[in-house]
Image (tube, rainbow, N blue to C red; front, side):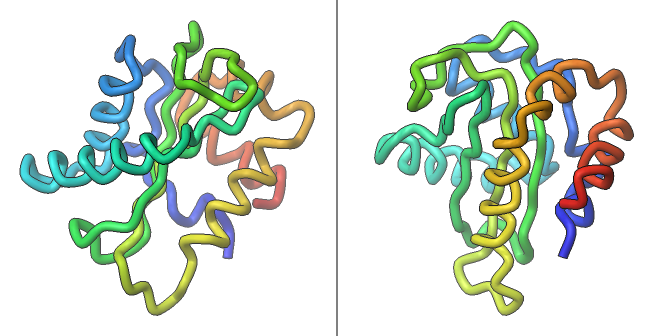
Length: 150
């Protein structure tokens, strides 16, 4: 299993416009191209997850995630906000990179936690934040995942 298999080019946004946590969550959900009702339900689920504790894992990275019936298979999206914003991350620093993960409640292939783990592992590599900041096109994001072997 490789992370890049789960990312579609149109689910990668290098210029997130939102200026609040809520706006960014909505923008990330929009990358999945679901219907309005599904977007609203997913937003509610992600908000509930964030209320348990921020998914900002530090080093400028957040991994908002949840399980929801609005998807039939694991879906992921990536967003970057170069200026960063307060996401209540554990290191209390602004977040610039957002990895959204949404999986159905009962997932036969059981990839939700492995994908979450791979993104967290990828994020811990020393050069990753700088490389993510330097990306010029969605294809470069996929190439970075390939290069890192995740």
